[in-house]
Amino acid sequence: MDKVQVTQEIVDAVKECEVLNKAFLIREIGNVFYGTSASSVHAGNLADLLKAHYSLEEAVQICFGEYVVVKSPEELIADLYNAKVSNFWAVHQEGVKQGIRYVAAALNLKIKGVNC
Image (tube, rainbow, N blue to C red; front, side, top):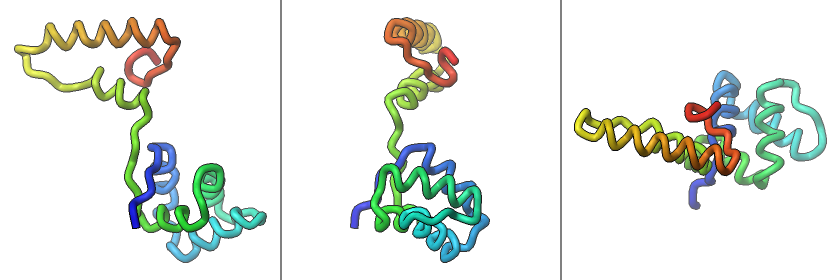
């Protein structure tokens, strides 16, 4: 079975639920999938995110850590913007950063660490 692809938002929500027992977490997510509310706020938030984008089987797989994080285009651009370079490439990297700022402004993109 291939790992489910998830966003950083899902990873963050899963981390908030790490203190919960796996069986309890899966029950809470199942409750939300089948129309009942969750008793844990963190499990309810995670369940709402999962229900919007995944099947129940994929949601359970995610609860067990069987996922791969996929970065959004904004996150990929932020990684490029924040890339560590040697002093030799510092001037080049500053040009790259300025280009990214221009493109972000032209496309009205809000990228954490770049322009917001």
